[in-house]
Amino acid sequence: GFNAIQNRVRMASSSLFMQYTNEALQYSGQSPIFDLSSPIEYDTHWIDEISRTGILQEQNISVSGGGKTARYFASASYYKNDGILQTSSYERMTIRLSNDYTISRSIDAGINIGLSTYRSGNAPYAAFTAAYKAAPTIPVKNPEGSYAYFPQSNVANPVALLEYRDDTSRGTRIQSSA
Image 1: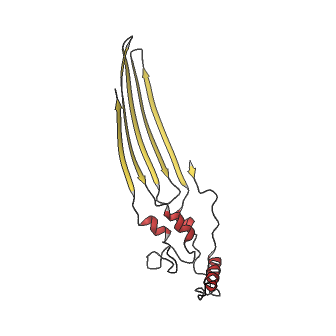
Image 2: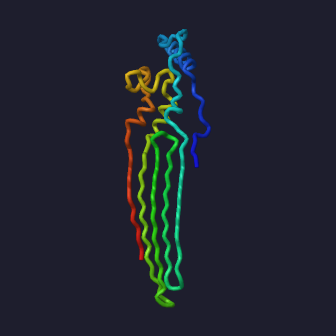
Image 3: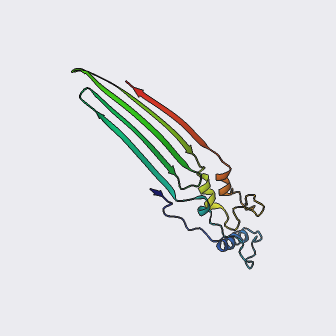
């Protein structure tokens, strides 16, 4: 399956951002910072830069059988979700085995074993907030390769927020019962 941003917010273009920023500065008694007669160099759509169409996949397989006195069940599953935020992901693999035995009319015995392992790429959701606040007048990166920023605000570069952070968690779970 697929995941996508629903109800995407329409953001201001660079020209509108420059106009509103100049007006806000003038209303507060400060000088404008943008020359509106100059050509627009960048028009960065930050939400597009940090998001993607997420892909969701899941596969399962199972086998079962047996007779009156013994039964078995085995299954394996794989789940992967690459989220809508560039570095977000979740992946899980699970194996389950089960055996049941009828020893007598009144006695049954069995064993169940499950193994699950996961890996989660935990993206900072602050990147969405930064993308809504970031100035569209700057590029993602400067020509020499450093991340660009708008010095008149305290908003981090949304792409840098994702690329500089590596928050991956992993785990394994074993469950059994008899």
